Amino acid sequence: MKAIILAGGLGTRAKPFTDYCPKPMIPIDDRPTIDYIVRYLSKFSEIDEIIIICNLDKEGHGNQIKNYFDGKESLLNKKITYVEDKFEGTGGALLRAREFLKNENEFLVWFSDNLCAIDLDSMTEFHRNRKGIGCMAIAKKKREETGFVKLDGNGLILEFREKPIVELEDPECLAIYIFNKKILDYISRERERKASVNLSFDVLQKLPANEKLFGFDIGNANWIDIESPIKVERSIDLIKKIIGQMKVIQ
Image (cartoon, rainbow, N blue to C red; front, side, top):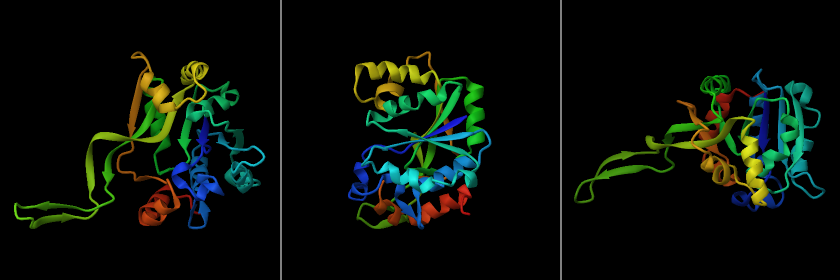
């Protein structure tokens, strides 16, 4: 199975960092975020190739990613392929990798700002057993970034909970998917109509009822969206916990 890492885009939320570096190169303990993802994916025997989609034109920041991994394939024991991102949306980016998926029945997609020690073996089994067009990782619990209080009628604090873990009425969606290659046909149809295709808005939300998309619960695994260097600084304890769960420090 091929694993595709979406590492392109404009990185708007991470400016001004992304004026000089791609967002996947946001450092965590002197390593770029994408390093942890690639090392984690490399641990799974099902994955035989990692495809990184990034901005590789002459002035593109994505060349920093390519240069970083240059010479590391033998250490990771996985082939790494690079595909040029043409800023055609997340769906359009996946179409750029289509030629590398010709002999695949399914493929994994991992957005490069997600860190999570998700059990990919279990997720793959879950997807295959349900025979849907795909499955996405979901979280039914979330650790809040602020504290909460309960008050009485006079404003007296009766209870204080610092950054509690809460049960979500509607699970959150992580940007980690396993798709049947049929999804590329739906993306292609949208691409014929639009210059830029968003995987979520333009494709997944519009799937017909007969195409089943399932949610794979990550259970007690922690996850975080590395949206900016500020987010890393603010959430470093959680990030270090996730990296510890991923067991990718070498």
